[in-house]
Amino acid sequence: MKFEYQTDRLYLRILPSEYAHHIHEFYIKNKTFLEPLEPKRPDNFYTLDFQKGNLNAEYQAFLKLKHIRYWLFAKENGTIPIGSVCFSHIMQGAFKKCMLGYKLAEDSCHHGFMTEALSFLVPETMHELGLHRVEAYVQPENLSSVELLTRLHFKEEGYLSSFAEINGNWADHLLFSYVEAPAQYIF
Image (tube, rainbow, N blue to C red; front, side, top):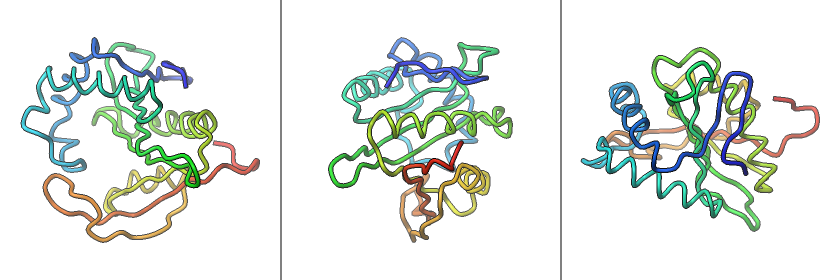
């Protein structure tokens, strides 16, 4: 895995802790938009120190290929993050799978940025890590994500009741998976 990739409109970067200020601003700006869709945050989450420590931990995890978060930057303004794609719970052995998570800034939604990022990163990560399967969990009412995953050939596999605690409440999720792409699937 590389520290940076490029697509037509995006830079996809693993960030060291020196970028904490930018990530802190991303979360502050998008707090109201993202909080309903994510786990409840610790009290110090919206601090520069927390973001610096988190970036450092994620950077170290990337070096070991245990947790991979690429931050997305539009090429037109390569210093302001617009979202991220995360590959977590990476398992090898008989499973060869991981969990996919992603988020976009509110003002970057519906411009095809996440389609572009995932179209590149999912097959690249599967190839580089030798994975067979990528799983994504989506709240049923998050229609944008359901449509995105369907468009990218993820297959809906099931309904998980009370699956994850999101913003302080247990929420149902749909399980989607992408299995090693046959030759006829081209993102």
